[in-house]
Image (tube, rainbow, N blue to C red; front, side, top):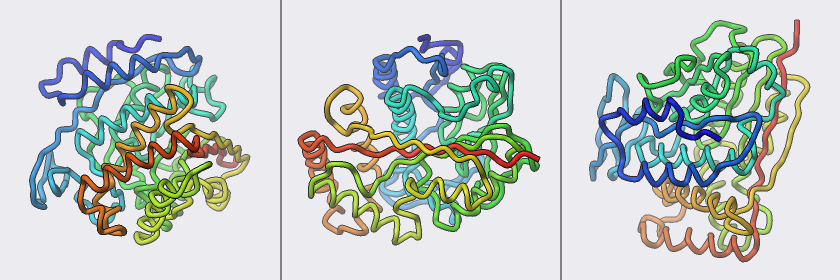
Length: 345
């Protein structure tokens, strides 16, 4: 597989890079495999972080952000996303994409390969720093890819010719006409959507999908892991309590198929894949690295449920202990991926 294509050369001309970009690319190389659905990779996003010890509000390139304890977050009150959106989190999301692709051996499940080859219009809903959209854009040059996110964490100027981005809150209004897209992809928004947001977002996605087109939604079940011990259970159920406190569904993964049907989609196809967490092989170890990194970035909101986790060292020791337990019990995270269609006219 060719990992460093023309897109990598474009990224290499950026003036600013974070200190760990090269190590991420090394890990990216280690995930090489042969797959007919994917051919290329993208590089790190062009987002820049700032560090303040106190909470501040700021505007970067006309977009609203706020800074808390040295981390950058979105500054949009109607957006529920709880993770930071700075360089460290962008690096994690890039690496997470490569790990998931390696673990799942594909970037998608919907039967759209022939369509992508011929040329279709695709939406990446909640695209974040755009790793999926970039890689898909390179792999399928006859198709056009549009990424949408509420925060400007995607590269605005450096991108493949067939990839475009817009700012927009999918839970409010998607700024595209009815029946625009042949295929819609969305994953890992369980930390960004309330219960009402899920309903509103799927209504919007239904509207912009063409009749007969495919939608694919994927999420992990972050409450009930397979083979989890008491330490990991505390972490997972604290996550559930945190989500519930924000009116965010704690079992969004298990509800995907029902929510798609409720929104009017038909011909659903659900697959549940257990992902190894810190055991058995390289995939399990890499998934744990991402899992731990994500939970460390969630410490501020997790500490609202367990006050002792306000201390970063106490919290990191606890999360590290979860990894040791997961290795011993051979815990798995269940990955739910469901695709469906908008009824044909």
